[in-house]
Image 1 (tube, rainbow, N blue to C red):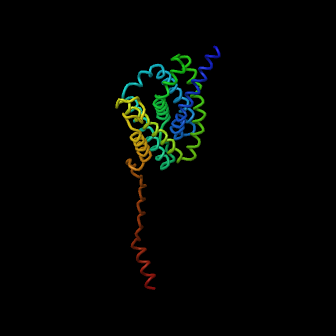
Image 2 (image 1 turned 135 degrees about the vertical axis):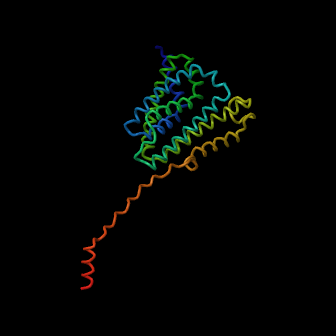
Image 3 (image 1 turned 120 degrees about the horizontal axis):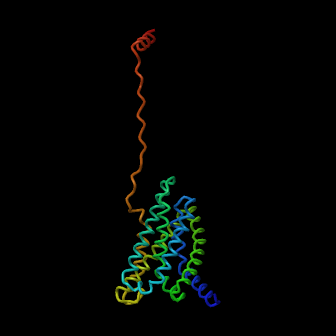
Length: 255
């Protein structure tokens, strides 16, 4: 393994860390709702699946990203994940004794969100690795391992201060809207970037703020679960006095 080969791997790790810093937010956001004994499993399995998906994506996505509508679908899915995580966080606050999600759901959401948020990263990764599968695998394993350490810290903070989950959801929603804006520009005949005549900058900013506001306000307009009201205990029957007791009471009153 030459110094040039090692240098290319380090460059790939640096590129992926810079472009995937917000992926640590979604890992922490999805895992902090689980019981403590399941959090590490969700992170390890979710990131393991994400590594395999990212390697496959990096090797084939250079042309796939040019397909109109792909980023739009990914952005809609990512916005749904952000809203769903906030909804489950609110349910956890209302019913703290119940786990709002399962280990399997957390693993799937970590893998899906990391996969979707990495759509824009893979072009840079593919260029840095010259589409070499071994180099891609080594670089992504190293970079995602570093992301795991960062997401573990984020997860603990979110578990202690639930309001920080709103910041994480806002990051996901903003990323989702950014992907949608790029796809709208591409479908309008632009180069996939907002701020051009195909998709003006003001429309892109309006879309970002609208998606973030919609995701953060999901708990205000979603249907609430009916509150469980405990059954009232039936009143105890009042014992009736016997005829003898009534006669004795009347005699006492007469005396």
